[in-house]
Amino acid sequence: MAQVSPTGNNRADDDARSTRELIIAESLRCFAESGYDGTSLNDIAAGVGIRRPSLLHHFTNKEALYAEVFERLLADWLERLDVAVADQAVGWAKVELVLNAGFRLFEDTPDYVRMMRREALDGGAHPGIDLAAVLRPLFDSASAYFDAQMEAGVFKRHNSRHLLITGYGAILTYFSDASFIDGLIDDDALRKEHIAEHRDHVLSFFKSALID
Amino acid sequence: MAQVSPTGNNRADDDARSTRELIIAESLRCFAESGYDGTSLNDIAAGVGIRRPSLLHHFTNKEALYAEVFERLLADWLERLDVAVADQAVGWAKVELVLNAGFRLFEDTPDYVRMMRREALDGGAHPGIDLAAVLRPLFDSASAYFDAQMEAGVFKRHNSRHLLITGYGAILTYFSDASFIDGLIDDDALRKEHIAEHRDHVLSFFKSALID
DNA sequence: CTAGCCCACTACCTACTGGTAGGTAGGCAT
DNA sequence: ATGCCTACCTACCAGTAGGTAGTGGGCTAG
Image (tube, rainbow over all chains, first blue to last red; front, side, top):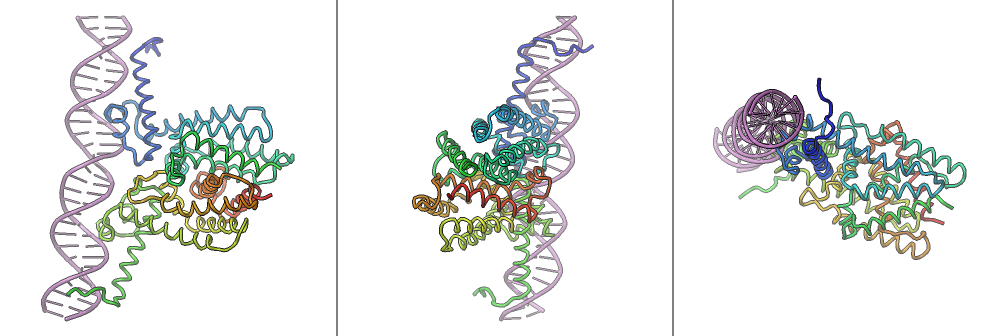
């Protein structure tokens, strides 16, 4: 009989999980920075401080590693957004709440944003990952929310689906293309104050397009 | 004495240029689809119908090929945008003109958009290419234009630089992430009618944020 | 102490990368 | 005919990719 999960190993399990976590964290960095093809397992292993075969002891292959990193972060993302979406605020207040949550989320995890952008750009090149399918429910419910608010006269009339796509592009791009934007504004676009500036702009811009 | 450039070879030069053009066209396709690291010279050569060494007869190395493709398309892009920007229209009419030109441009060259997005995402990973430096003059003059119009009361007040970044994100994203958006709207996002839909939305959205 | 597991290691494999060397077929000018 | 040039080829290089096999140390359980 296998003794399933002995309750209290300390170092063994801790180290194991810690190594796994280290690998995932380093993979995120690398995949965000250089993309799937631009990242070698050697790069990741070196970042963790182990050799490639040791890395492959924790993950069956590169694709599985990528999938796990992606799924992990997608789960984090949805969890945090769900909290904001679940709030009972209505009208503009709710939009502001969700936009703020999005900004905070992206500010906290810029690597995730770049990885997500690469995934959207590659468009299903990585089997087993269907970004659109995961986000679709959120997209549909948000679209329905806008339609209802517009119908009720709370918001000005717009195409709700394209409105969401516009918002997605406006916010995500600032973080995913930050290093490009650096060159436009002559400073680090990811500095807190610049992020706040962009957030304030997006909020006021969307507000003046939606309200009154 | 070397006979410099005999004036009128027909087939030799034509074939040569045609092969070069074929390589550039195929490179664009591949780089847009799979990125720099995801594209091998063999892929490109195979697409053209020649072998890798023959390809390297036309371009000194992979980086030089990438640079030429990128510079070529950047030049095309700036040329077309300059025409729109040079128009003497003022106020919202000018914004509408430039946005329409941008949409037409992106619609005509979706591969270019994806390549450009990848470049912005990689942020200077490819030496000798400085996207921000090239676009900076356009960015600054556009920013000045908005500031002047807002000062004159033609447009509502917004942060002009962040307004431009928002617009850049809103439009580019639709094309660069088209395959992801496919999954959200359950159809090919690059179909003419959907592009028109998004263009109409962006125009009306920006208009209601800027005017009145 | 011993048995066994976990984890990381070295050593190796095949496939493919970007790039080079050297050769050949054909066009064109002298 | 000769000689040069362009455009392509095959064959090869060193380096690196992802992945596998087998080894050994350190820990824990019995």
